[in-house]
Length: 337
Image (cartoon, rainbow, N blue to C red):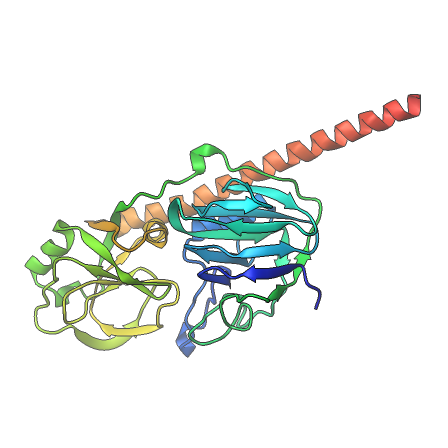
């Protein structure tokens, strides 16, 4: 296998992820996939990929990567102070790297997770239709694990794309406190009226026990009518389980396929993105939303991604046409001489 990138330092937790292993939960196989679907999709758009192409997901501290060939790369999501050969480079942009260039990262300025996309594809075998790394099961990605120093990645490079910048109006901010919209259910009848009122009334703090599997919260205990346990049923991303201690747990990308704790509600798609960029000691305030409003926001989320993709495609076409026109003019001048 050819080596396109050498991992000098791996960072805290750098894994290969795409949009997840869809259609296998009935067999007990978790979905996995990127935590922040928005940032990962945009990183792919910046290099001309479709949004389901595999990317590198960085958590807190990024890796140091040495490139062995020229390619276009894009970075989106958290500002983890990226540098190319020691010179700062922006987030939410794509740029060309050449042989022997070194990409490194510094301190986190905002957010938690960033994504690196490559024009082309990361050459690792799909498992059940996905390249996503599920570390606890040791499947997918690079040998089923996070990257380590000395690893060598192969990239099937696609040439011909041009650097892009995401328009400022699309760039999100990552505050330390967020309102999180929740649809009640499916087991809201397991909780007292006061328990549900407490859940929506007081803010919760994200604890240090937060990772790709779930986010444990600290705050007002949510009172059950009788018990916390249910007959295990399906768990989806954003499901909010409440165990016997009354402290909510939000299930995330690497969640189990089923769970035996009552679920008071489910976080909507666009607010899962907010949670993916929040750190320990950040706070959330839950807000109730109707199913109809949640569906409308769901559609709007994907419409926004479609708008971004089209905007970048139009910009790319204009740049390439301009480049072709300039090249033709130069050739014409050379002929005249």
